[in-house]
Image 1: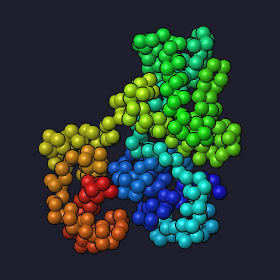
Image 2: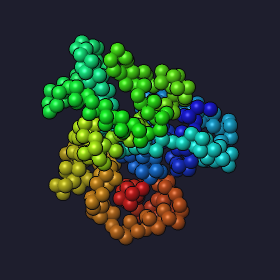
Image 3: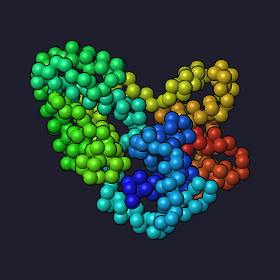
Image 4: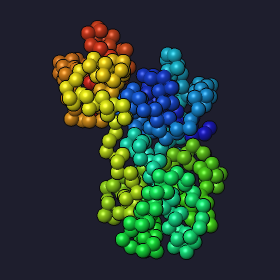
Length: 349
């Protein structure tokens, strides 16, 4: 069994029949819709958001069929599943043997991981070659924006290239000592240097004789861990910290939601925003839920009263469910789906 099957068992366990397996698929793909973003928090799956962007839908059904065949999961609705006792026992054993990487946080770094890796990768290659007085080499990253960033970084350095290379090497060596030897190996094998081209994830997996999906998660885990540690200790890792795209570290709203948020701050209501932006009202509602998820001081009382919020949370606690239909049915249709979603988002679910 590959780690993708273990991953889906883990997600099915968290979703507990409240969402279809394609809800898990959208999380792994990093689909930037309000529903998927909310589900990440609702079911404690923020760590896995966007970590498998290349995952194919067909692969999901192959995994599901395999898990059903093994009697690790059983259906509880259309494309909705829960773990069987056998599946629960198996999952616990496998996660003990091969735990999920602890630094994964796809939700927090969803807009910065890719830029951070391409910058770090190219900067490493450039410093390695320039320190060895090799001035002509094929850049491992072809993206012109990344190349321009690295050129500006090298030109603006207050020290010479040799000293900058030594400083960067020291920071990276110190940083990687905080990871396991396997994690560090996965990461280092991907780097390019003097007369050396970094390996692909598949090549790394073959080299280390580990599962391809697990190798990918370990790699992303190191990237997230490096970013987190350098943000927390800028003075210790100034060069690494400077690589992070600062424009995307604090703004977690999608671009279309930002535009809706601006109109909300001007006091416009849902109908007015829908008209101005030529959007359906339920799309605007999705944006408002996303705002509540990411802007903790945003007041939702204009859309759902404190009494309604208390009623919603009472039903959530009573039924111990996150399924919107079950919650709405118990509320006797006096409260809308939007109000339920908005309340859950505000309460941190």
